[in-house]
Image (cartoon, rainbow, N blue to C red; front, side, top):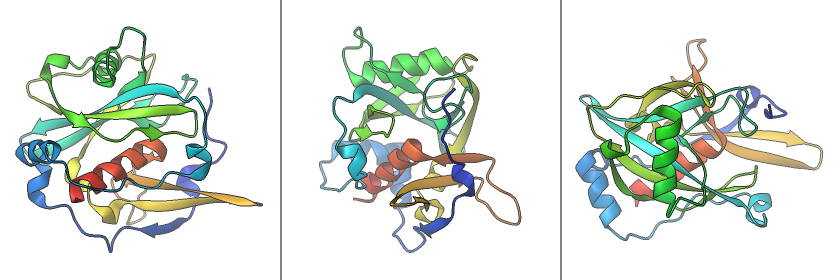
Length: 228
């Protein structure tokens, strides 16, 4: 099991996005998302860390960003990874994994992995499009595939890969006030990363789910994409 050599929850908050603009409410609906993915608007992804962009020969992977169409609004389906995994053990992530030779596209890989990890029927997923590839510090080039998940659907965790499945309202994750920048400092350097605890920390209660690292970075890119 490979876990971070630091506890991300304990690191100081450098800043939040409380002063940043909000995504228009109409964008956070199925029709709003469909319209946005049909547009070709210029926008800038979040800058990558220099040490990541210098990576050579990253392994290709894909994740599904599943947006469940609930009566109260869209939610993002996330997983808590099992503790026995060799990469990102115990962390919050989207369903996904490495591309296999049989995967014709990143979309095919994302749908296959989501079916394997959480038993999500690909027929219930309306693929909207993909966000820019995201390079992780563990050597993966990840394609985030965004899709609407139509009810009725069921999910069930593959216990070998997934410890639990949970949902977070899309409007919570797209609210920049919930985007924290935390920093790890050591002699001669530092690493900054995004974190989105859910529920939001406050009143002496820490977030039940600590969304951080690559997953939070991809969500931040999704925010920038929707803001354009």
